[in-house]
Each structure stands twice: as C-alpha cells, then as structure tokens.
Image: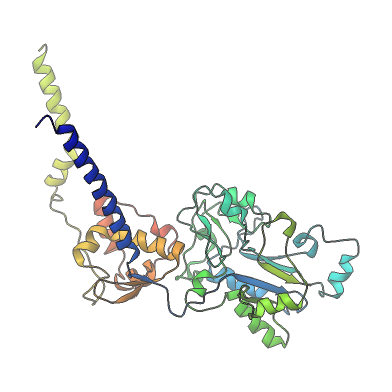
Length: 271
Length: 127
C-alpha cells in the first residue's frame, strides 16, 4: 500500500485536474448555448453607427426642439448654474465647435453661409474613445456597433472620462438631478441618474433597440418638413456603402471636431 | 476563578442587554410578524418559478441589467417558453404594481435597501 502511494497520488491528482478542467469546459459551453436572451427583432442594427450634420441646411428653430426632446425623453435635468449643468446635446459658436479652424474672416462665412446658426454638438461616439480608455470601472465602453455607451450602474463619478473627452460631451451630476425634474415631466420608461454619476448622449441606444431612429434625428426631420427645408441631422450605418450617411460623406467634404487629436469622431459636419 | 459571582452576574446582565431587542419584540407581539405581500396582479406566473424568483430575483435582475446595458439583447425567454422584455419598470412593476406592498414590504422586513429607485422611476400605481 505504502509502496505505491506516490504513484496512486499522481494518478488521482492527474484525473482530478482533468475532471475539473473538463467540467469548466462543459460549463462554459452550456452557458454559451443559453437561448434565454435575444434582441428585439425590430431592433435597428449597424456595423458602425454615425451621424452627419448638414449645417448648410440651417435649422429653422435654431436646434431648440431637438435639444428639448432629447433632454425630455432622457430625463436630463435643466440646471441654470453653468458649473452644474447637464447636457447631452447642445449648441455652440462655430469658433468654439471647431477651434483652430476659425480666422478673422470666418465670422462672415458663419453669417452668410450658415445664416449665423449655431453648431449642434453631441457626443462624437469616437472610434478611439479616450473616455473608454480612462474609465477605471468600464462604466463607459464601446459597443460593437460603435456606440460609446454608459453603464450608470458602474459609474463611480471619478470624472476621468470628463478630463479625457476633448469635446465636453460629458456632465457630472453634482447634486441629485431629481431636484430639477418635475415629477409630472419625468419620462417613466427611462431612468434618471443619481448624484455622483456622469452622463452623456447614447445615440438613443434604447430607441435603436426597439427599431426607432435617434429622437433628435426624428424631430429634426419633422421640423424641416414643416418648414419646407432639408433636415440638418442624418443618421445611419457608415460601414454600409449604400447608406444615406455614407453617400453624404462621399459626395461632400466633411469635417470632424478636433480630428487631429486622433479620437476619430463619428459625427461628420458638412459646412 | 476570582470574583466568580461578579463575573457570572456581569455576563448574565450583558446577555440580557444584547438580546433585549429580541425579548422586546416578542413581548410586544411583533415576534411573529410576517410581511404581508400583495401581488397587485391577476397573473399566475412570474418570469421564473415562485421559489426560484423568491430566492434569487436579485441575481436575475443583475443578469438582466448587465445583458441589456452591456450586451444588447432585451428579450428574455422563460423556462416555459414565454418572452418578456428585460425591464424592471416595464415588466416586473407592471405586474407587481403595488411596490410598497410587495417589494418594500419584504425588503424592510429583511433590512435590505436596494438602490434601484435612486434612478429607475417608480411607475404610477395602476390600481
């Protein structure tokens, strides 16, 4: 008995390792085969979502309505103190939107070619997003379809992402945002945020999941149709060579905000 | 043992004090308190069997959360082949429409404080 104990020990140890190993393999295969979860069949999908902003079109209402709709459906609080403001989509002057591309005379261009209208700005859903790289909890991550998404459950409010984002697309909730949301105006199907959480535009991921285009693009079309103008915002799959956005990028010279920084923004502007 | 009397009396006093909340609740008739859950629905089946949902609804909700937010799928097929949207407010609270008489009743009893409602909006009671 004692003579063969080492031999037996090695045999048993070897078999045990095999057993544990194969158990893990079977377990992971069983999990992978789970069919409990499925996407909504109506969901809009793409290889790479992108937006084209045609500033030549000029928004008849100065981009007020799309901002209003976006912030309403996503329960974004309206805080007047600029140090605490929260925004998903907003406007700014040409020279602020495209710093380094202005000159003494671009003011005339903005007045004449763009009818003095402000530039609509939102998260650029970069291909190389610095916010994702710096997030210590992976609360911000890049989806396969290019959307830079936030998991508010994981955000610890460290604001590294706000320091990383060169576009100011991110806002921290310095106080409980519900203080600034009237209960009757809250959209019940979308959560609010809580104090100490960073938020930003999500390209309406929750609408894409049920087959709707982003709310800003939808309302922009409606506003343009009403006024008899062309819509400013266009949304689609930039990897699809036949898509509207790809066609626009092919036909026109487009610029992106601070593209020299190498974040590869996916919101394209036509001027 | 030196001062055995004092030590034993001290221990007894200590035991009485530390178990006081138990005696107090038994004495005041709260000892047999059980949460009185009101389902708020006519539905007979949940998204998982009753015992399973009772024991591990929190794990299920965490899985739903991570699947929806991080992986994309939004629909959940149950063990008996029904399909539900993975949504706390749209699916769970649609049936369990009386949150205070269902979720809170048991959570308060168990001393659990889930932070779901810091962000998720409690739907208006439908009944």
